[in-house]
Amino acid sequence: MKRYGITWLTCLAVLCLACSKSDSISDEKEGEEPGKEVVLASVSSPKFTSITTNTALVQAQVTSKGGALVTNRGICWGEAPKPTVEDKYMEANTVKGDGTFSVQLTGLKSNTSYYVRAYVRNKGGVAYGEEQTLKTTSIQSVTFANGPMFIIGSTLASYDAEITGNGGGQITERGICWGTVENPTIDQGKVVHGAVGQGAYRCNITGLNERTTYHLRSYAINEQGVSYGANITFKTIGKGKVTYTFNKETNPTAEQQAAYARLQVAIDSAVWYANNYTSATKHVWINYVPGVPTADANNEGWMRFGTEAGFQNLRTMLHEMNHTFGTGTTSWWRDQAIVSGKYQFNGVNNLLKLITKNKEQTLNGDTQHWWPYGLNQNSEVTSSWDYVYNCLIIEAMRKDGMTSHSGSYIN
View 1: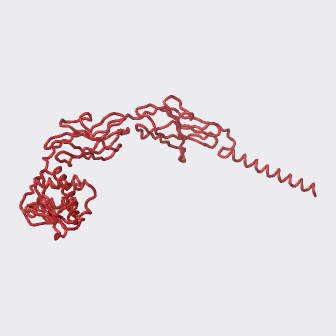
View 2 (view 1 turned 90 degrees about the vertical axis):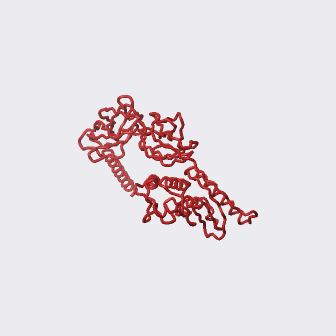
View 3 (view 1 turned 120 degrees about the horizontal axis):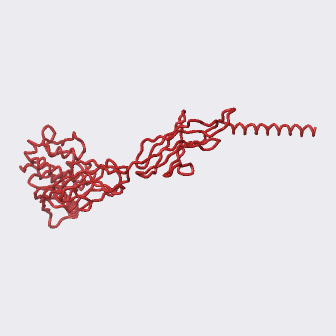
């Protein structure tokens, strides 16, 4: 029994060893063609598409497997001839059924010639295709979309620039430059925008002289140097002369003092916007009147604010100041400006198209109010630019013929 057991176990061990050895041989021969000697595979010469300053798409095809499984395929390149996988290389992640594969090369240098070969690896080793030369493109000038300028005040202005192409390089600085001579450069005066790269951006200029003609250009810097957009000419308006009298009680209550403080901030801010973005001349009177539900004003310049703190703000102050200028309080407004709910003059409507970037946009209105940017409700204010747009539209209305014929109070 003992001898039989040893013999049986020995046979079982030999059988298992044989099975294990057979499986190993099968794995090693996987992909090989029976009866054929394994030789190096072969691959076509590379073809190039989508060449830029620092990238290129390279395509090649495995033309023969060499009688064995292809384990790797890809592209190698360098600035010296006959690059190998010991140099820069990138392996293809996918391959089509006909053996075609592609690799996206990145991180190349602009205006540079590279030697490129496809490679393929099987059990026999690494084989290379015919060498081809790839030359990346040169970095070009930055390109701009040159839109009109519409944010123009008396001593300040803003321009919406847009970079549509980086020239194949990296934009490291962008902004606008300006001066009193045509085609200004960054050596004369510039505003640098904080962000870099392509896209739209807005730059603000301060310290201008009123009623003066200026020239402006967008600029950007990449590896090629400084690029400029088209020359934009604009003229600043005359500075507004809006003044005010704040009627206050001699011995105000605590409630009145709090209201006065809020209204003081509102009127000072509103006057700043009106004097910088309109050329209007007007004197207004600020009054705190508890009997007024919200706020109202007439064309004579009399403005009244009630006890509701939510209306003692800049939005309401500018809205009521618009009434003192003539919106909703003049015969020009009622008889000429608004017809069937639409504003009738081109100055405002053309400006509004630029503000909204909508070629179909026109100003809407009724007997008292107008929109958009009429500041009719606190919810209409999304940023300080809404105050600027409001004043720009008021100035356009003045140029369209808004006249001063007194009317009743409008809130």
